Image 1 (cartoon, helix red, strand yellow):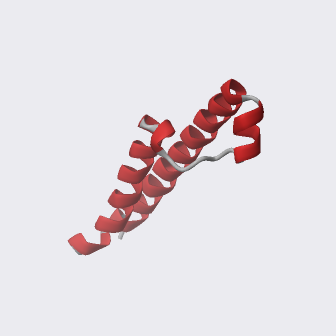
Image 2 (spheres, one colour):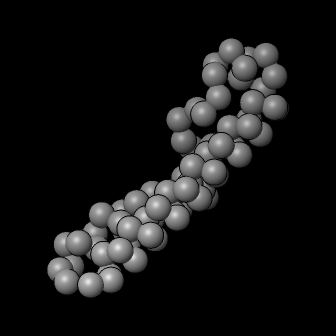
Length: 71
């Protein structure tokens, strides 16, 4: 097993953790029109979608890491 095989899944996991922990820093997951019409609802929806993306990236990265570790 090479160390280089572990780097990409670790980067994906780190990106997922960052996306989950700082959802409001991410690019908008909600349209600009919805943001203007109902800002509170749009912010909540944006936060939920960003956190879901973060969890998905974490899960994908962990499965990828597991696949890289199994011979």
